[in-house]
Every structure is written in structure tokens, then in C-alpha cells.
Amino acid sequence: MKKSFKHFSWLLVLLIPLLIVAGCGKSSSSSSNKTVKIGIMGSDEKIWKPIQTKLKKQGINIKLVTFTDYNQPNAALTNHEIDLNSFQHTYFMDQWNKAHKSHIVSIGKTVRAPLRLYSKKVKSVSDIKKGDQITIPNDSTNEGRALHLLQSAGLIKVDSKVELPTPKNITQNKLNLKITAVDAAQTPRSLTDAAGAVINNEFAAEAKLPNSETIYKEKINKASIPYINIIATNKSDKNNKTYKKIVKAYQTEATKKLLKKYYHGLTIPAW
Image 1 (tube, one colour):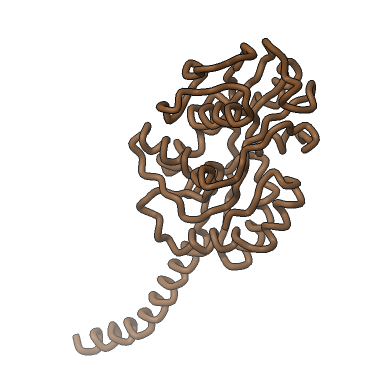
Image 2 (cartoon, one colour; image 1 turned 45 degrees about the horizontal axis):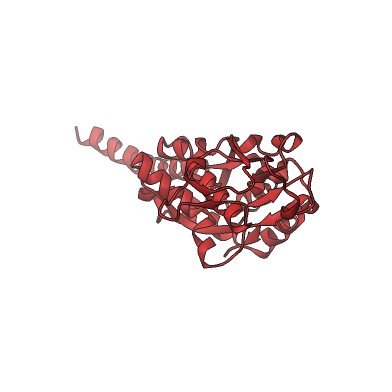
């Protein structure tokens, strides 16, 4: 009995260190294999790729998940199909949270991306004629923002009491413009027929629209602060240390140079 116990004791002495090492190895491996999924619009991939490479050297693996529809990245985030997204401004996020009773929060600023009115048919706003068609994005936030842009350009007036106006809330339209809401991704294509189109910067970049076709640009002032783009996550993850490292990796001089290179002034660093 004593001999058997003695052998068992020696066996424990030999096995315990091995078990500890094996346990540590498993923990380290699972941690290093953690992948952070970030939802982006396709045009932003060239901005995020270098960040992805940089973070990989720090042991943070990023998987970029591209979307083509503004309604998809937040749904994917709340369903935990992705961990972060980087496509929206603060106002869009706030409206989404209200409409879907979600708890998405900002963990870092990225860029200001002023809306622009483009045209292939006229050179200035004053050249727009009676009865011309103007297309705008059809998602509620950018639709209202586009109408305010057209009001700022002096083309229409909208009901000041309505926070998110639609074409139904236009109170003055002296040129009797045909204002049509279409999917945001389709606004560049609409320039073939329409006299002008209000286009978000990522879709303008994808369509390679030149600055020379901009006939009016959203002003950057206090009123535009809610339209600063952000990196967002679920509220329960807002203090995640890895996510904060990703924000820090984005907010660099290198990213500023990439934004200038690929967007040619369409977007402005906001951090």
C-alpha cells in the first residue's frame, strides 16, 4: 500500500508540470487565434488593409467583412455576426438605435464625409432648370440630410419642424424639381439621367466621380458634428481593450495619408 502510494506521488510530481504547461499553451493559443470581425463598406477596404497588416504584427487578427447596403452592418453587429463596424456617422447610429431598440455605441472617430451634389449635365447649381430630376439616398437619415443639403444650396425649402424630412416635407420647390429617393448605392448610376444626385462619399469613391463634378458640398460646421463617422460596437463591448487598440491603430498619420491618397479630399480625418 505504501509502495503503491509512493509511486502515485512520484507520478503526480511528474504530471502536474506537464498539465500546467499544456493548460497555458491552450489558453495562449485560443487567445492568439481570436479574430475581430469588422464590418465596412467596400470602398474602405483599401484604408483598412494596411491597418489589418499592422495589427497582425501585434497579435490582433482582423477579418474585414464588406457590405453594400447601409442597413446590413448594424444588423450584423447586434446579431454578433461581426464585432465592430466602421461605416456610419453618429446621427445614423442614434436613429438606428431608436428604431431597432439596439445598444450600439461609438468607440472612436474616423472621418468627416460631407455629402455632395454631383452632376454630369450642369456645371453649377444655378444651371439646374425647372422640372429637372435630382436623386437622393433613400435611407431615412441620409434622405433627410440630402434634403437639408438641397435647401442649403437654395433649391428647396423643407419643414423646419421635421427632424428627418422626406420629399413629402418639402414646403417650397420653385423649380418644381423631381426629387427621387433611390438606394444610396444607385445614386452614382442615376447621374446618367438625372440633372444631379446627392451621393455619399464611399459610393462616389467607388464610382470614381471626379471633384470637378461636384456642384455643391455640405458645409462643415457645428451642425455637421453629428455626421462625423465612427467605429462602433455593442455597448457591452465598449471597454474591450483589443477594440481600443484597433481604434488607436486607425487614428494615425499613416491613415490620414491613405485617406488623402484614395479619397482626394472627399473625407477629412476627424480625430
